[in-house]
Amino acid sequence: MSPVPDPRGLAPVHFGLRVVLTKEEAFGACQALADAGRELVRSGRTAEADTLCSLFSLLEERMVS
Image (cartoon, rainbow, N blue to C red; front, side):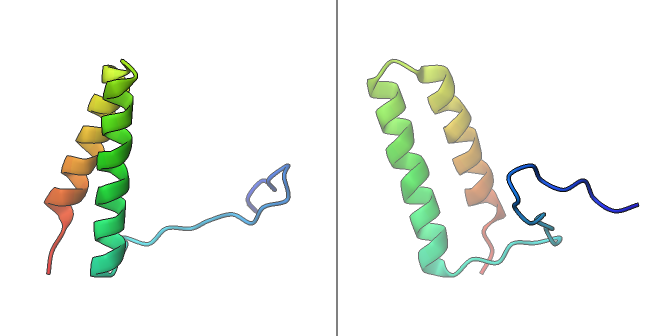
């Protein structure tokens, strides 16, 4: 059975068991989540900020050297 084609013409994405990031990429991802979380709190969207905080925590927990 072949995958259903995307109506926008985009190729399907397949994920492996792990995602490997460079130190700079991991730092950038954490910084973006922290910045977005602060902006959400400032705008009164604390539920969304909490969701980003959970994602940040997950990313932080999964980092290995």
